Image 1: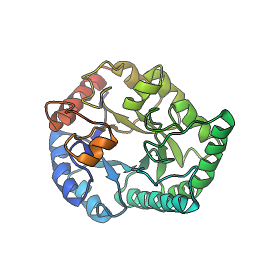
Image 2: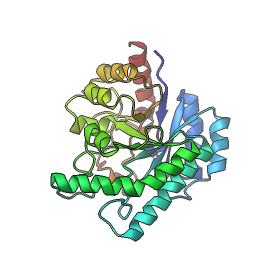
Image 3: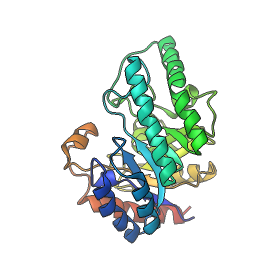
Image 4: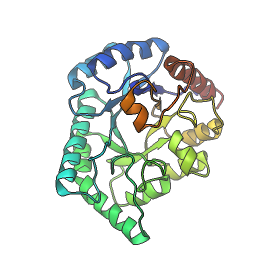
Length: 287
């Protein structure tokens, strides 16, 4: 089968702005990518209408607007002003998705990346209830806009709230599947799940977005991951959306520290994208 494959401009740039998109999107199209993720670190990083036109010109699908959760963006265990600010930011992400044609807003849309704390089982359930309450208006707006939220569980070093697919599914029980699902990311799953294929099967029916990279955040396929099992599980789950290569450059101080990228992950950033695309296409053809 032919896999739809996308890439994230974070492989080369952060923040991603109009200039970064104008430089990156033509190259992705030339290499043969089908789609691109659109990171939105701040609401005005790039022009939504101009980006929609750029995507159309280069015949690239907007796979997802990627929500970014730095310190201060939180929906749980925080001050009301922080909740309101986070809701406002996520509503901008929904607007950006609607105006660019992206079907999904994906990311750890619950708490700042790097924020961790210990919880008893009762405290965890209370945090999940608080999260559902504070995310509800965003889900409502997403449904009205024809956009789906995709909640990304992160590894234990980056959050203590949602680490596994099972926790994420449990937390969103009772929320409308048309408005909210799970974002899978092979980097985090490799740390937290006992089996990549089993985690995919568990999420079947609520998979809203998929991000891929090697176990070290580098080139997909240059690693020890069970790619054939992972891809077969996605096929069996009926997922037809793009698989988006997400990696980061070590040459940007802020993103390198945030993503703990302390060394180059390939011979070049281009190689992560091009070799990753080649591997995924071969792996898809072998299914």
